[in-house]
Length: 344
Ligand SMILES: Cc1ncc(COP(=O)(O)O)c(C=O)c1O
Image 1 (cartoon, rainbow, N blue to C red):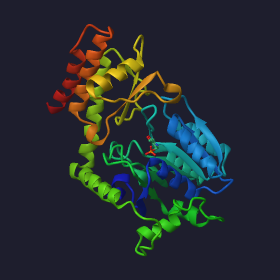
Image 2: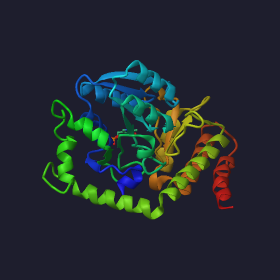
Image 3: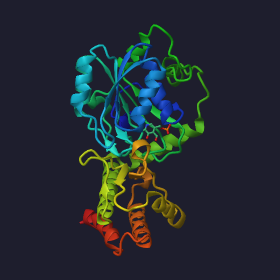
Image 4: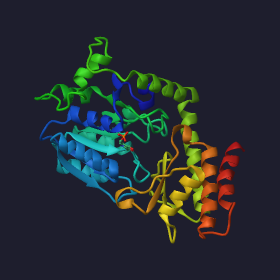
């Protein structure tokens, strides 16, 4: 089921024991040897974390950066590859949870393949919410987490590695620096050898199996459409409230919606009222985006009409209470209309 979800035929596809960050470490540490050049793309918190992880495992890190809220320009990746033809890895985040940007992936894989660099993709906030096409995009290593669009408890990190990526791991001169995440050992545990490596978190493995079963019971097409519709309804409500989205148009992930906090709106007051009066928690901005954007997750089971319209109506009431608007009802109607139109 993980192979189908990742869009891959990769034999080595399994859930790493640990959260999404464990997936990130496992993805990086198996293919990076000290001194390897790694091009890491940064447009938010998690690209920054990936660069830190690559640095800790001894990579010479080359950064491709754009302002937070924008996608990475594939031309910038190509430029970095041309300037560093010996780079062995390009790392990029598919859905940047700190900004709500969904990275277009079509061109980057081809550039990496023509340069012989491995493409590593963080799918923590995309897998199960939007299409992920590992094989089609030329991605050699990808990882995710269970607690986002799979609606499973946190604790496993689905990982997939191509034969090329495994080849890089097998040709290493030294051992993988992490014992726990050494895929050359873990693959024997998951493989027919069944040789003990570490104790599998079996409750989590049952949980992910059930979560994936629900994903395929719904069907990927239906699931992605449900996420897209929830996002569209949320956006209609947000805009009817007089606010605008933060992430660049055309590059927004429906799973994590960022709203620009405009004018006289008090970020903390609104989030506090949402939590205390309505039991709704939305995320504040991270890093340079702190105080400038809200982050609204519509992931997995959460991406549904009841949540969208409840949030929008709560915001209308809070905005009225805080004196930001006199009109109540328009935004809820705008969000509801999107759902009504989807039926017609
Ligand atoms: C894009 C992305 N990558 C990596 C991580 C790290 O995952 P975890 O917090 O499960 O360790 C997160 C967590 O939010 C994320 O959003």
